[in-house]
Amino acid sequence: MGNTGNGTGKRVTAIDCLRGLSMFFMIFGAAIWWYSGLPGWMFHCQVPPPDYAFHPEVRGITYMDLVFPFFLFSMGAAIPFALRKRLERGGSHRSIIGGLLRRWVTLVMFSLLLGNTGLMQSWDGPDVVKGIFAVVVWGGFFLSLWRTDRRWASRVGYLLLLGALCFEKFYCRLPLNVHNTDVIIMILAWVALGGGLVWLVTKDNLRIRGLILLVIVAVRAVCAYTTALDFLTVPDCIGWLFSWGFLQYLIIAIPASIIGDLIARSGDSVCNAGTKNRQKAVLAIAAFAAVAIQPWLLYTRNVVSDICLTVAFLILYGAVVVNSFLDRRKNGSAPAVCTADIIAAGGFILTLAGLGFDFIDGGIAKDFCNLSYLFTTCGMAALVTVFFLYLESLGWKSLFLADCGQNPMIAYTICWYVISPLLYGVGLLGLLDSLCPDSPFWAIVRGLVVTGAMCAATAFFTRKKLFWRS
Image (cartoon, rainbow, N blue to C red; front, side, top):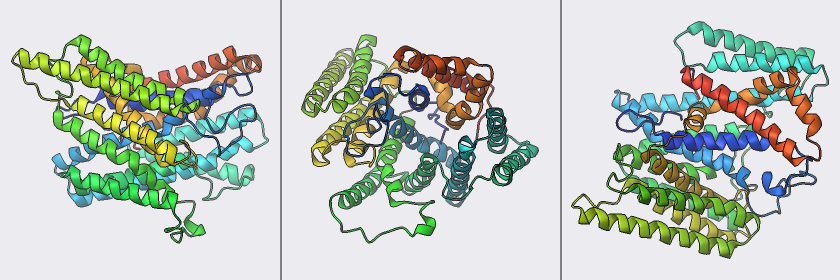
């Protein structure tokens, strides 16, 4: 769901920036060099140095653990814009449901193709062949997913992808099957479908949507803390396609869709025009600071200090809102609370709820995901959205992040299928790889080079208005 325009037809840059920020963190965290002496907080909390193996017993989060929930939140926030626009154009509920199902099929197929073409990295053939293969596959992705009226493009794209799979299967002898999936894209497929259907049913009643959210939270809690629903198992034959665990991420997407509706309904008045610029700056800083402390204090497991500081930032935010309210009333302008401040209140509440669940869940954890993680990261995503909304109202827009956020699937794939092979081909990544072992500086430089190239390439496609159906 990438169509995030407000009631005036303009894009909501804050949502694009949030999505772009998640893509930046994802690529940077994957591109930095392991075994270089970097601290554990530079990686996923549960995949720490020195062995970089998965440790499910570890509790806490790092900035890398925010990538997926931030992306899910931006996708959920975009649902009202995309679907309501179709309704306004005369689309029926039936056609919209058909569109949601087509998108689900597209994402499922994309997940399968990513999982199976990714097997090429395990092939022991020449690196140059792997590089050419990756670029050809990405060309197939581009042509088959390109939003264009040129019918030949999708046909050529399908042929390229079919040829690549045949090359893997019959020449490289790689074991292609349906169990090779990109689980991130598979989860997105189900959340996009579920979130879209929930929005369609509740588009005119946020209370019912909130009730559906509470039911999902209750079911998730029953599954987490009891064995009452253990009998609801998924048959092995469809385990590659669906897991009940996928639906828990609606706990992030549904609140995001509510926030998306609030932004859409407010039009250009998301932030109060009567609020002074100095006050807007303080509100932006308070929202961002409340987010910035979370990875630090949850990683170091200072949860009580985290709660106290989060409450302090909430009080600061509230004091500025009240002060702005009094100033506007004194000047005779409308003193109504603005949408951004309502979103901020929701963000603080969700974050504090997640911190409360930290004690119940035995600590926040991304894998296996718990309620503390879902609530905390959802609240953080809402506060980052508020941060970008206020920056936008001050006239500052991170167009670089927004460009990446408008083309997320290009950003997700172009790094590993195009940029990395090309940078290895010209020798730059090979040089950096030789400098990275035991050198935190060069490990970070490597991450910045790869991530910067991804952002620049994605921005190029965005500004040329070359988008994917995703």
